[in-house]
Amino acid sequence: MPTIKDVAELAGVSVGTVSHVIAGTARVSDATRARVEDAIRRLGYRPNPIARSLKSRRSRMIGMVISDITNPFFSEVVRGAEAAVLQRGYFLATYNTDDELEREQRLFELFESWRAEGMMVVTAAERGRRPHLERALKEGRPIVCLDRRPSGVRVDSVTVNNAEAVEEAISYLASLGYRRIAFVGGTPGMYVAADRLRGYRRAMKRLGLEPVDYPGDFRVAGARQAALRALRAEPRPEAVFAANNLTAAGVLQAMRELGLRCPQDVALATFDCVELLQSFGLRLTCVAQPTYQIGAEAANLLIDRMEGKITSPAPRHIVLKCELRPGESTPPLR
Image (cartoon, rainbow, N blue to C red; front, side, top):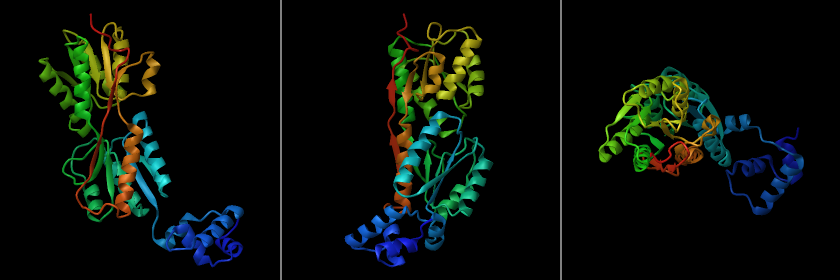
């Protein structure tokens, strides 16, 4: 395996010059840089990242904590973050919390021990203070929260226009003739769940319709139970709006269990557009989130903080827009 000394000898420069070319830590003439890069290519030299981090006292590691890796939404968010991190010369370590606050705290400790230079976090759904998050920020560790913005913490975030997007979707259902529109949502108190529920209630009030909501937990099993309550109500809803993709899957399971057809008996619209739902044989009306962009924006915002390109202590909040995509699950009501 070629070493940095081999590169230096082939290029006719010192080991220090090779290090400067690789790390970009000092100005090197174009001719010298070209010789070093040519030697690296010819020898197939690969720098040792561990040795480099020990010498520079920089790990170039970014930690990412997400709440539910089984949710395709978060998988796509991670892809976006991963691509941006790699492009900017860092590497990403990702862990899952299963929405458990205690596990989130342990992961913060783990990343601190690994000297992660920054973190992207989808906070757990549980309520309460987050001293681990507050402590990391106080110590100067850059953090960006994705999807969910924790209350009471001054931290950079990347989210979407949840309330406005749901309001647009409910207005669309009403324009098709639906009046009894139920909302099957997520864990009460969670930022995203509360934001989407607020959009639903605001739209229903503006339209002069009666809001009826059933809390779930943003997972299939919990959504199924909530949907069973909604679909057994009298009078039965004409349409259901599901607060995320796993909730929509739970609603469809409940419909099948009760012998109901979508959209013949009950129409369905959802937040999130993912291939998982196509297995039900129906193209759902959905609110599409820019999932890949959420991850990429969060990664670039975090690295800008890490590299000192953002100097203001004031948190930056990036809010991306969603897109309503009509589908076969909400035909005009006759």
